[in-house]
Every structure is written in structure tokens, then in C-alpha cells.
Amino acid sequence: MDILMVIQQQYPSFSKKEQAIANYILQNGMTIKNMNISVLAKNVGVSNGTITHFCKKIGCKNFAELKVQLGGLVAREQVSADNNIAGQVYNFYKTVIDRTNQFLDINELINLADQVRKASRIYIYGVGSSGLTATELMLRLMRMGFNVQSITDSHLMLINSSILTTDDFVIAISNSGETTEVVDAARIAKNNQCKVICFTSFSESSLAQQSDSSITVSNALFIDKERFINSQFSVMYAIDLLCTILLRDSNLKDRMQITVDTIIDYSRLHT
Image (cartoon, rainbow, N blue to C red; front, side, top):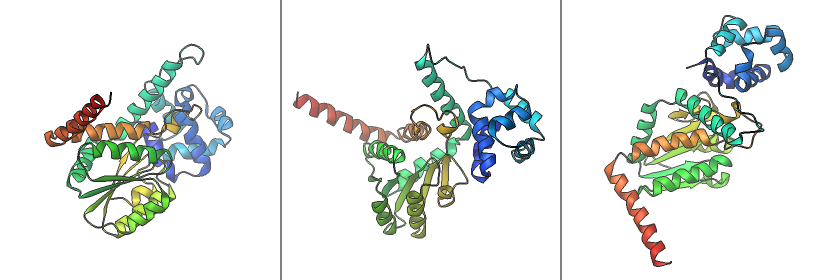
């Protein structure tokens, strides 16, 4: 795991000033290798001592070692906004995937696939953009024949979590891991002895602590928060991997093909 991943992993434990340093490094890491500590301190609005303390907190002896580690990373290709918008978006998605791959443990996704196959009923929690991702995952699992429902309303989420049993399975989605409604619903589900697995950017977040296990992905806001680009891409990438694992099961693949054929036949009859 490279130094940028270490910073994201520890992010929830940072003070506000440390988070400001982390944000700057995560978004501008390739420029810092040519910067002295005073310039960085001025750019972030903190003292030299705060930066030195931050470096030690993430496992570097000093600022010089942090620069060495940043310099060892492969710089993302920078594309001018004036001549290649497609290149900018491509680089963004490529970076999200590269960073997410450093976090993901394929065995955790295989375990999640096993839990999905065993569950009598599956409920997927998410609000806002994460709610859209929850609905997408529901549609994919439904087409494989699973008894699944996405819940994106905060009140319904609490109602549902209060009546779950050991036969049920919850997948909770929150990039920050601090979405109050999702965290509370996960906690209630756990109190009912229901299995909970979450997708989040922070392995030490409140949601992760309320879950049996977590799938950690890259946080897109640390890569570029200036552009209005899909903040759910890292979670969707992990979901793509999960579905690929599930579809190695011939029975699930056959069920999905039935839904494909049904839609095709329906379209032919009504055209």
C-alpha cells in the first residue's frame, strides 16, 4: 500500500488541520516532491511543525521522507483542460481504479459473494448517490434470481432493520462511512443478529465498526473534487468485481440469461 493509501486509511483519525494537509497531498501529491516544507505549510495554512507531526503520524520520519515516497509513485498523466476533456476523465477513472485495487482484497469479495448466495433475503441500504448505487446492485442481484430489495428512504431503512432476523443479510453503502441513517440502520440490524457487510472508503469509519466486515474502496473526492464526476465509481467498480465472481456460478449465470431472453422476447412482441 503506497503512502497515499495510508493517508486515506488514517484520514478519519486526523485533526482538522491534519485533514487539510491530507486533502492537499491526496489531490496534489505529484507537485509536493519539488516543494519545501515552508511552501507546503503556506499553501495549506498550517505551521511547519504541524506538517512534521503529520509526517510522523503516517509513518514517515520527516517531510523529506514523505517527498521521497511521493516521488516514487507513478505520476498520473496530466491532460490540459483546453485540449482533451476525455483524457482528463479517463485519467480520473484510471486513478480511482488503481487506488481502489490497492485497497481491495479479492478474498473479501469472494466472502461477500458466498454470503449473498447463502442469504434468504438481501437488503441493500444507501441514501443519496449511494442510494442509486444500492438500486443498481439490487437490479443486478435480482436478475441472478436473488430475493433482494434496495432501501433508500431513511425511515424505511430504520423500519426494515428493526425487524430483520438471522436469515437476512444487509449490504450497506456509504463512501464516508458516516451517513447517519445508514450507520443507525446497520447498528439496529446487528442488534438483531443480522449479518452486515458494507462498502466504504474508510475501514475505521462508524459504518465499518457496525459491520461484520467492510469492502474498502478509494474515495474519489481525494482525487478530484473540482469536477462533477461520478463519486460512486469506486464502489461500482467493486460491485462489478462482485458480480463477476457471482456469475462464475453456472446456475446464477443461467438465471441471468433467462432475464435477458425474457426482455428480448418481450421487445420483439411489442415492436
